Length: 179
Image 1 (spheres, rainbow, N blue to C red):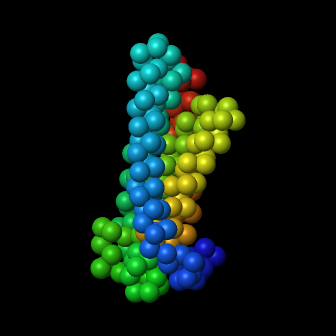
Image 2 (tube, rainbow, N blue to C red):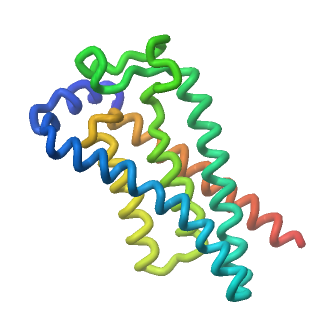
């Protein structure tokens, strides 16, 4: 359903606002850095303060991001989807001209949601949940507002990131329980 609405959403006159698009692009390129830094910071602080829980949270979060980006890149190479600015936002798949710049999936969304999946699993406090999920949602929304991705690109990228992140954390938890 989302893929069928992509062209309509991206063709909306409300989305065609150069100032909005520029600000959204700046935000969407800056926000993912926090998701990359967070696991490293959590791990480092855990080691410095002898907090095993924090140190053990950072490792699978990093692994989840790497794993989800591998899945992301394979799907990009398989789908070869045009980006919204190409061909009137038709979003055609299997276009060799898309090459390594394929729109489907959104790397930014995949990365953000894979990081959130683990961190939010290990730190279930309300403030952590709201902040982590809110920022990841912000990454996904700004990719569409910046006209860098179609809604389905960020929706599927978010789902892939979340699922891979949850899988990695589940596997690490099982391994920790067996030791």
